[in-house]
Image (cartoon, rainbow, N blue to C red; front, side):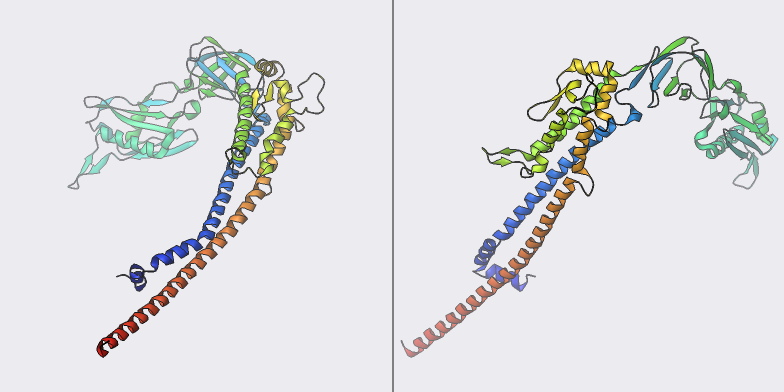
Length: 468
């Protein structure tokens, strides 16, 4: 059912006038909302700028990290990847060539039972049993029942297949990711038990002890796919013999991880050289990070007076001038550098265009620095007094959490938005009262008109009665 107010709005001839008056009075609110929109746009633009600056700072931090050796990276290669793979880690700090001969790979221990008739019950004749199994540092006692009660309560002997199935399940439940056990259907009714350690090497071999009943009979006649003493990998590097329980070896040569793939008995070469391409990528990523920051700032601080267009942060001078300041810093020489050594970015082949873009203008010079003078190049990025370190300091001043320039600017936006929200809320309250007041006035006007109409009707009726 419609409320009285709704009925009035549907029938009151002055309702459109009320709406028009309220719309006129709403201009202040609309202006405030537009101002809030501008502040939100500025805040969004500031967030994009902050993100780009932070990425630039993070990239410099990566290049200043000595543990990753960004300007002295090493790459390892194998003369035969089908036989052996190699890769370097952050602790590898020298080049070299190593000769490796793989004589045996590390393998997983596999225990196999005899093949037996799965429908037979000969294992049950030995009675229920238990066994202690050790793999690595874990020891578990596994038990298996050889009889069961049928639906009529009669004790029945389990078949060989049922015993092997129960034994396999109990092993996997106990050892989880350390062992796998299965009962295989070999052919016809013939079955065979198989247990495999899931980690290679002698230290992860399968050990049986204190077996009783059917499990003693089963394991006493079992065989191994590989003798326990041959489970470890055997290889030599530059004449030094190694034995390991795994085929992924990271402790033979410091800083190298070697993966053994085939035991050929043939000598292969492992070579560690400087990775110039990776070092170059580190430099180009620095250039890209700067250019992304430069573009983000320019896109949000531009001024196109001819077409009356401007970026959201065009009136923020500190943001607008950041990349200009960084470019000027990038052109300065580093103090304390000996004559003839790289002192500025231009000395390693990096320059700036008029629009602030950083670029590599001398590829040959950069290659020379990466190849022949990497320490000088690295110093421009890592030394605390270097050009790049100064650029980092200037950029960090903008993005420091809570105290940075951007945090201060953002706080100002937040305060303005908060004040605008309060003024908009006040306008909402004012417009609500104003609309009600106007509606009441028109109600009163309508009431006066209605009263006048009634009085006029009474006069006309009286005139008619009097014969006028």
